[in-house]
Length: 438
Image 1 (spheres, rainbow, N blue to C red):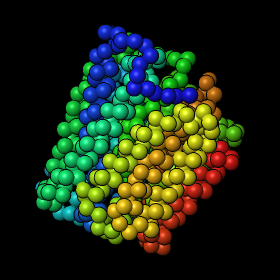
Image 2 (cartoon, rainbow, N blue to C red; image 1 turned 45 degrees about the horizontal axis):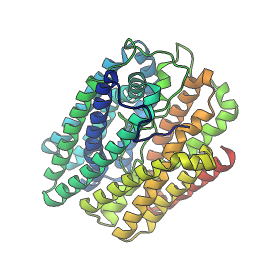
Image 3 (cartoon, rainbow, N blue to C red; image 1 turned 90 degrees about the horizontal axis):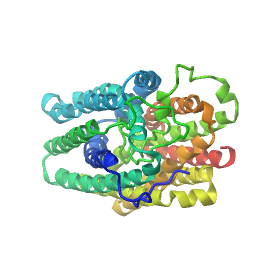
Image 4 (cartoon, rainbow, N blue to C red; image 1 turned 90 degrees about the vertical axis):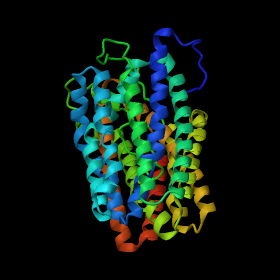
């Protein structure tokens, strides 16, 4: 069972580890600034520019295409590189693109600007895959096992605070400054956070000789963040489970079909169904908020803050819930709670329901996103974990791609609100499947 705590049972932090811990805390603090500003408001900005459901879907689906293609080759590439510099340079090249977010409103007309953001998010996902795969490995090699729950707990608390404060501050900026200059300021805040986070990653030092060492003890980084992956409230936090193990294939073939012929195939099928249903609704949320209900950016920022606060509070109860129900059923409960998010969004008429559904969605993701890693790892053998996790990561990115494109198509065929209800029903069915068959 993976847990994390803000209190350390190991006594004072050893001097040899203090620098790593400090830089990891500052890294996540600045990542919270990035996540609460530029990343969280990109789809809202695209919607205000006149983007349709298909274009909003491409903002999510584009990075999934890159991840689908590049994750396994990136893992093998990282096997041959010192992990610290590899992560730093991946982060640098990935996050330089945030500067383009700031200047594109000066260079392009709104209709072209939307397509430019789609292209830029696609390109920046190439080095972003290296960051996503490598960061968990760097963390595992820079923090001893006995200290990981404490460091992760502190990082989650710091991330929650900085995300919430930044999101509320950006909402105030967007309410008081003219459009689109207000969004340029928000994107500039994100670029600053990205640069500062990357600078701190440079100073995180592996405890070994700089190359990943085989470990007999698996570990999943329980961060609420997934560096290198786009995630906002609508994205509901992509899981980065097991990416560290993709750097440890040892040259073996990871995608072996016999793995799916056994019980693990049911696990992958259930999670694939959940992620398709999850991402089917995601491109539709900003369209409802902005075009149908006319929410202000300030209100949207409040909903984001409540969502993330609920994620953090719920994650503190994850271990207790898993001890009572088991990870499979906690995951299923989380998915069922997430089914309420698109259903209520389709029916809500004003701000109170939006704030309430933000709390419900955050609680649901704290259970689903927190339990999914333990659930998968419980069902993967120690001696073949990279191959099993490779299939999950393949299913995850394929589901993101399929769901992100299917949702807009459904909205065009049956209407926006009906498509949201389809997404809600699909999530509920996936939750029931995981509960009974997973």
